[in-house]
Image (tube, rainbow, N blue to C red):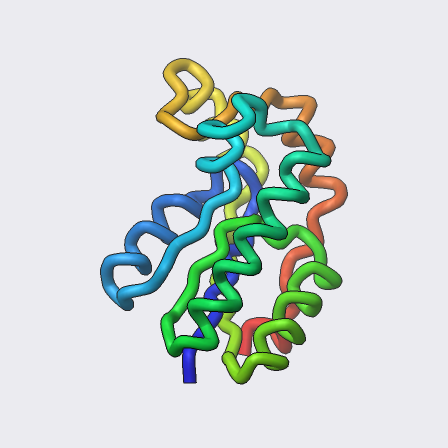
Length: 148
């Protein structure tokens, strides 16, 4: 049974690093919205275009899962509702879901983002402290039952 891997965490938590490690070790198809936003849109904060990219990435993921290929989605999955939505989508096509939660303290995220903002790696976007603070408030960490 193929597995849909959901990478869950805030900016600076290490989602891309973990996703790339899993991509090679599993192996699996990795789909990262920020990479597509950077290359196609040039702006990581256009919600309408991000939604379109994530929809196309889900279509690709669903096809891969239906072919028996493991898939990694690097969307962040900030809310339980988002995680449940993708779990049910995966189950509908016969795939299991695994959540990989990167639980990083706020102060460490701030430090990492300040460092990353000095010389952003390719396909990333600057996230300032005010944005991080806002994201921190709306982020819903997975509960233990989601991580089983």
